[in-house]
Length: 69
Image 1: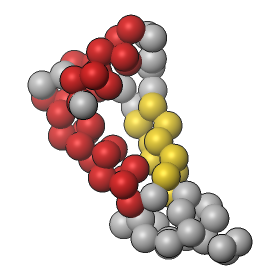
Image 2 (image 1 turned 30 degrees about the horizontal axis):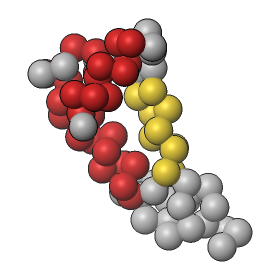
Image 3 (image 1 turned 60 degrees about the vertical axis):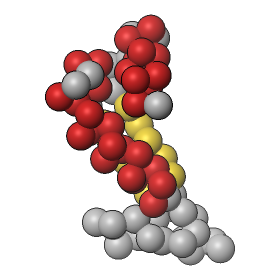
């Protein structure tokens, strides 16, 4: 999966990633950061915006959607 993502980053000439989601998005983002040593295409700026009704993203006090659930 990480290899496919790195290929698509190169294919579409992406210069940054914005990841929006809950704990799974957070985990996926960490996986991409850890794979930077193997895949040069992943060496782009990344930001993870917490958006979950569960409000369960580590390192955040509040997430989009938590107050409207």
